[in-house]
Length: 237
Image (cartoon, rainbow, N blue to C red; front, side):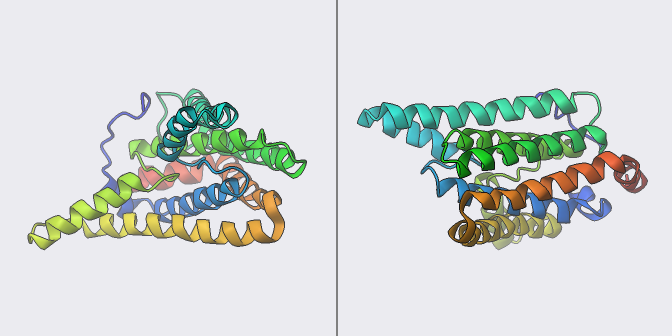
């Protein structure tokens, strides 16, 4: 990310020193899984990560399914726009927790609310808006204190877990706290998918209200009490 500059605080240090980092990351990973599960119930392409979307785009073009290809392309572009919006809001200078993060999360909540309204009314245009919301979230968490924490997909996280396990088998030192953190992210994402599937089966796209409410609460809390998040980070650093 162009605004994610290296920080003095490493991820290993942050895991032990920033009290709200772990629960916050797990909550966002679960939210992304929840959102992705509901979106997949509407359209076959994932919205929280772009690997599957780009793959489907190539398949759609090869099969001559122009309508599906356009829909998939809109998801990819929307995710990118969402990341861009987060980068614009948060900026490159202030990487400490503060109101800008709250604004970004409130924006994610609004996108999810509008997407829910569109999908409930039968308009599939709500799917790209969900992807845009995921782009906002991923860019926001990736810039948090410069830690580059991905919460909307788990490919890199699973890779890191495998690498660390291989190093452990060779009796090399590994950061156990970091390993547990990453395992928690993958578990939270999977749990979110499971809960999302259950919610989608019962309430359909209206289930996005739950995710929107969660993002609005998180963003509102950061916006109203930025000093708590900033002080808890600075105090530990």
